Length: 193
Ligand code: ITT
Image (tube, rainbow, N blue to C red; front, side, top):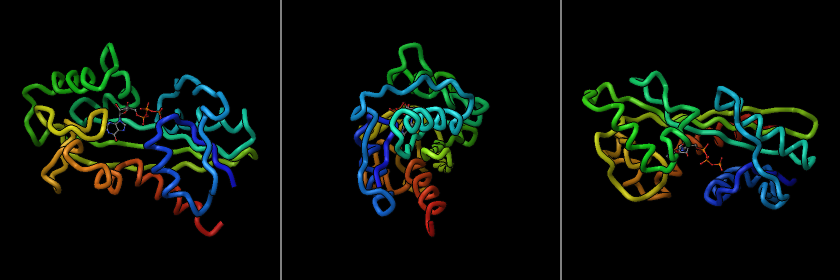
C-alpha cells in the first residue's frame, strides 16, 4: 500500500518509513505530487495535522499522514506550542530559542519544565481517521548547548541523559523523540487490522 506524507522533511520521511514499513510499502511526499501544505490555522496540534492529512488525501486519493509538533513550556502557559516554528519575528531556529531564553530569564531551574508534543493524523480516502500523540519531557536550559538536531534542541535538557537534545546523536534522539512515540502510538492503533 502507498502512503502519502504531508512533509518535505527528508529526516521525517526516513523515520516514518522505518516505523510504518510493515503496514505501508511505498512512501510518497507532497513534493512528488506538486502539492504545497495548506496553511495550518487550527488551534491544536491535532487540528493542524488533520488539515494537512485531509488535504493530501482529498487531492490524491491516497491514505495520507501528517504530523504537527511543538514545544510547550509550563511557565509560559504552554507557549510557544503550536506557534513554535514562528515564535520569533524571523522564525529561524536561533531567534526562536533566544526569545524563549529571554522569556525565561531569572526563572529557576525547577520551574523550567517543558515538553515537546507531536500529533499525527492518518486520513484514508474513505474519510476514516486515526490520531496519535507523543510527548518528550525535559527542562529549558539557560544557554544553548550542542550542535545536533534542529529547532529548540540546544536548549532542551534531558535530566536522564544529563545532556541537551542537541548533544545526543541523531540515533539516540530518534529513539526517544516525541515524533517516535507518536508514530509508535499510531502503529499500536493500526496493529491487528
Ligand atoms: P514540516 O511542517 O515541513 O513537517 P516543521 O519544521 O514546520 O516541518 P513541525 O511541526 O514538526 O514541523 O515543528 C514545528 C516547530 O517545532 C519546528 O520548527 C521546531 O521549532 C519545533 N520542533 C518540533 N520538533 C522539534 C524537535 O524534535 N526538536 C526541536 N524543535 C522541534
